[in-house]
Image 1 (cartoon, rainbow, N blue to C red):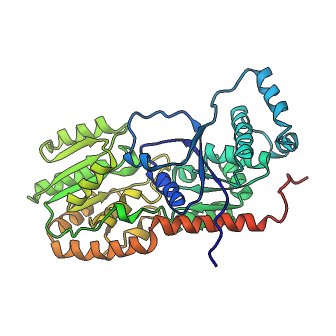
Image 2 (tube, rainbow, N blue to C red):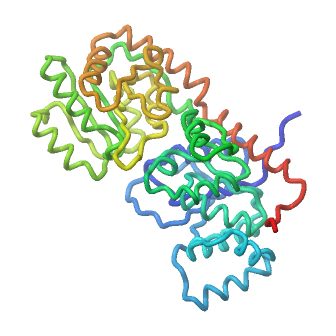
Image 3 (cartoon, helix red, strand yellow):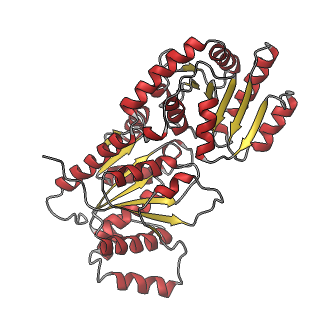
Length: 410
């Protein structure tokens, strides 16, 4: 007998769409392919000017929750009016403890909307404001909620650990994107129901191609921020140049460190070999990955505690057959298994990075071996349709465990 799918899902995100969050879009599209209705709720206005073409495939409706606080009398009048649909509202507000006015305002609006739409469950991405509001709204509307924790939302030094502990404890279940994250959350927050589900890809959109006959092109993709380690990559390129290794390097992405990186390229005399290409649509990134001999992801632990969880672009590169060099940061070794599915080097080690890049640039047989193993791993563990189905099984379990409506504990 086929498993029944959960009812309409509410996906809560801070902003939608965002250029760098294709992993959320991939997940929503997988739900849509399975015939599961999804409604997207965004809590902040869009603040980007470029968007990925994959967004055109999304059919799920989007509701933008008002993100400004009304005047005090209007705010309280709205809360009083909401009691007709949310009878436990005042008890919930009292039991849930201190909350920001904007969070409460948005949560009430969200709770009313999910009641109107018949949403059966709320799932948020990132354990920050999206989960804050989803948690409140779920209590107001008497629903369950889950969330996916990624990286900055759990590692950054500015994370409110007390608030995150509450969200972890209150959620019906928590998902995160690597085994490293599962262990880290357990170590820092104790026994909470955390499960690992990798961010996946629609593998039909990422066909494998052999890397044997590619030109000596190094590619890197990501925001130009400290945790990506692109300063080390530029320095490693200088080492390659000095060793006489033929190569070109393209870094796709934008961010606050662009000027500093451009200065490094100039200072090392690499203007003819290293290009900062800016943001590019996903179709261009895929084409660049298919043409590169090596993909470099020299991730580091940033000074503010920020770090990558498990970069989706690494998964994309490996799916396409591009051999990868990365570092032993967070969950990356679960994907880039040194000598098996890619090469790992210590973070910030420019000599080791240069050596690994040179090794792959000069050895077509090694590129093929690593790429073949990597594609096999991606097919096994990173198929978004399979992983989204695993996520929906959690939603079903959550629903099945609720024998009666959840009321705020007294």
